Length: 226
Ligand SMILES: [Zn+2]
Image 1 (cartoon, protein in one colour):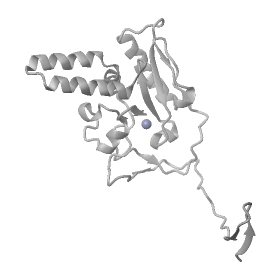
Image 2 (image 1 turned 135 degrees about the vertical axis):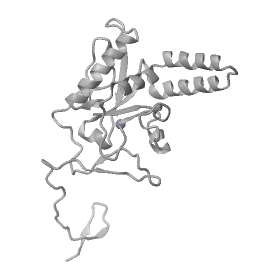
Image 3 (image 1 turned 90 degrees about the horizontal axis):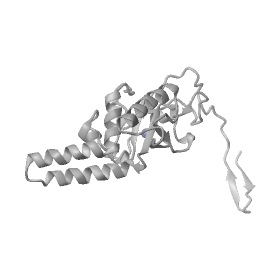
Image 4 (image 1 turned 30 degrees about the vertical axis):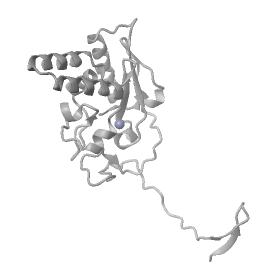
């Protein structure tokens, strides 16, 4: 039944028969299944990706992560739309973290998110932190690496320890990562590592065996999911 039709550009093309098919299975009670993305070779530690045929629309129950008394979210609300349990857990971590580091209601800590699209992001169960204290996570990681390189070339162990301790006390990106790690309770889907990744994951855990690919994907932000 193919026949020729005229396109808007006056070319004739053969029209293919259209098969109507059901595009998406019902999703209401579909459990989230996990699958692995294979981008560059086998990588067992990729982020889980829900395969439930749920469109990437925003669920009405999602909310932006709110500002607190001692910290301000400076990114647009749509960059941090998450489930209430994740919003509440991060609010708690940020408030405590900011207070401990000397930020106040008058001089709050700034935190910025970026929109994530893969895996648990599609369900609002993950957030990507891109900046803290008005500095990008990538820049904090760069500072950290420079300090560690400098420490490594120091002749005495005492001097090395002093330089490392100094950077650990100063670097807000590293400190926020450690605060998130200490808080715990983050998502760990079956057969996947704990969903806390960032530039410090290989050195600090929890998933020290993070692949080069996954580490590279988190060189400029901290991914956390609940
Ligand atoms: Zn993410």
